[in-house]
Image (cartoon, rainbow, N blue to C red):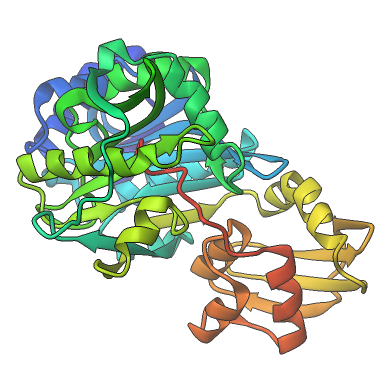
Length: 408
């Protein structure tokens, strides 16, 4: 079929059955019930787009986008997740996937989204569109070798997703709300996400249940496990949160979560948790560190992202004692930041200290995945030492973890 006969547009309700069949054929390892949840019963449908390529009336390729608000300190960011990018075998190698993704990027930019994120093992497919690979260290332990950490001071129970307690939302807010980079979870998220993800081997909780820790009949901590996106056979402890003052509950929680991983045949167990998490700090001496490189990020609106970050950047700039103009240049976009102890702003100027960043470098720096100094050592940032020092002060490396519990 000729290229001009292919039409790319967002999917409507009537297109969802065809999208379901396309996704089921592309990922047969996922039960159909899991795909039905993702495609037909998406609770965020009003805040997402699925783009498709049509040969006549036939859907032959698609990519799903869904909205996730993110907090970075006092800044509110608008992130888009992308998943199930796939093309029917008869229509591959025609550039349809890139056309769909470009349409998605155009929509994101027009609707004011700041950046997009996905998990993938085919990095070369996305790089031509400006996507950069984000590498994060991941601590892993053998299921049979994980030490016992808890002292049995908390009562451990398992709760089915349909009975998700309201207490989990408060625990998450108090545990993760102070983190520099976190997913902003709405009441709708807590009410609908666990049921929506049920049965999906990628995003659903294994066993469709949470592990909770109680003290005096009060739920004070919770956690969950998922299949790994990084390697076959591994299972990840993807979330483990506790109320302040009950951090020791995480250790009892760990013992149960590892036992569940072991029962599910997961080996190794991946600790998909912040590096300063109490479980990680205790297991890191006996664990093995691996590099997770499945995450790719694309900055969609660089000036808009920096403007959204402005309250946080200005707060960080108060510790500086000098003014400067820094020109951030990449193949995605270029901007100039005017920095002073009083403010940080985007200005219309091509002057200033030049900093050259790769696609991966600019995403990693602005979102706190890696420091400017580390990126420079890896060749993703080219700048002099003074500029690197300034960037490290404005964009410190954070313990980012917001994507873990609902991977895409």
